[in-house]
Image 1 (spheres, rainbow, N blue to C red):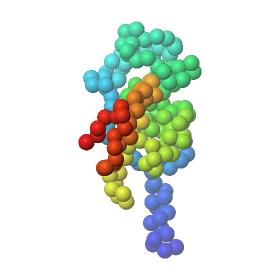
Image 2 (image 1 turned 30 degrees about the vertical axis):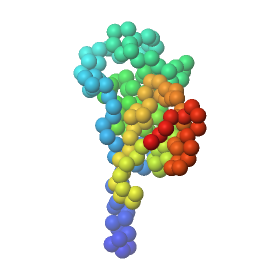
Image 3 (image 1 turned 180 degrees about the vertical axis):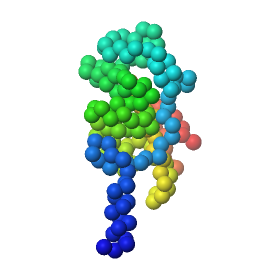
Image 4 (image 1 turned 120 degrees about the vertical axis):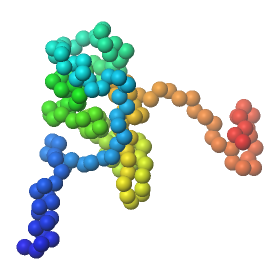
Amino acid sequence: MTAGAVLLLAALALGPATVAGAPKEDFRVPPPPLTEGIFPCSECHASMEVDRRRRDLTDMHDDIVLKHDEEHRWCLDCHAPDDRDRLRLAGGQLIGFSESYLLCGQCHGDKLRDWKVGVHGKRTGSWNGPKQYLLCAHCHDPHAPRFKPMKPEPPPVRPGQAVRPGEADHE
């Protein structure tokens, strides 16, 4: 066996951790957009008994209105009940908030695929070098992910093109 083959086998053996049996991909992301002053969640939840009952929250987090498959989902479907500083995948694996794309991708696989290749979401960096990705939660509220309706703007006016009545001048 050649030295290169030995190095390749060693790299594969010591390779990245796995989630659900697949190699873990490392995406550079900025810190998740967590609400100021509430993370780490364990600061408050450490002294609380875990209440797994589906219910309306009244003491804290009562400003969160779940509009994300709310007939079938509840907080502890995504948030780890025994480690509130982590998220929980359907298979039980715990992940950090910076890997929340794995959680979203369980149901939105086509969006995750598109996000990974830079077709969905925002990605900055070099064409063939390091890239930084925004997490789903940078653009979508995970509790109510639909974008708010936006008023469409008129198309841009090309130089020398007459402005149609009712359209603003874009110059």
